[in-house]
Amino acid sequence: MTKESIVGQRIRKYRQGLEMSVAELSARSGVEEKLLYAIEAGDVLPALGILTKLSRALGQRLGTFMDDQFKADPIITRAADLDAPPETGAGAGAYSSRSLALGKPDRHMDPFKIDFPANGEHEESSHEGEELIICKTGRVELKYGGETFVLEPGDTAYYNSVVKHSLKAAGSEPASIYGIVFMPF
Image 1 (cartoon, rainbow, N blue to C red):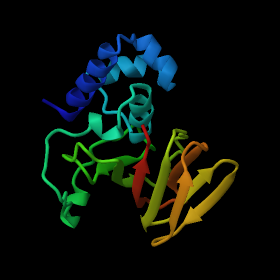
Image 2 (image 1 turned 90 degrees about the vertical axis):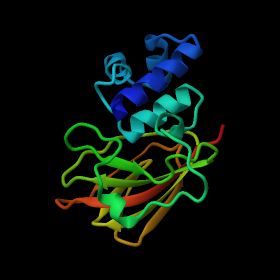
Image 3 (image 1 turned 60 degrees about the vertical axis):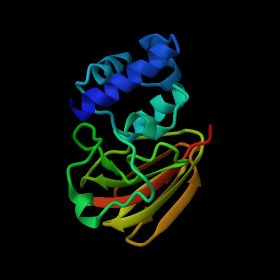
């Protein structure tokens, strides 16, 4: 079974459990119906921003759709594993991400390594909670509300994620960050 089909099945299961139609989930999440059908069919592995919107609309934490097994604490991610193919991605110009807490079902935060391609596009997001990002490589452009900030390796940003925000590589070089998302229930 592919990662795409596992994520799609979980989203469909929670949607159906709430007796919610695809149209209702689309309205609650802001995700297009056509994309929802493709995700539930296992044809598309949604990007982190889309998963965030769906998790909130379904009343679940983000990791609910990404975890595929239980692991005992501590969850260790080796540096060599961070360069493996990403777990989530999107179309050309979008970012890809890798969870740093897969297998920890009782977590309250969702940590990720996120890679941005050169000349990528902003994918705007807004949701309850808070985020901490740490620039790992390259330069990252953060749009937050009406302001724009550029982060360099070692720089951090911590913000209320209910404010519209987006991230992308700044300029013509790829970039990566570590990001921690906290969404209260």
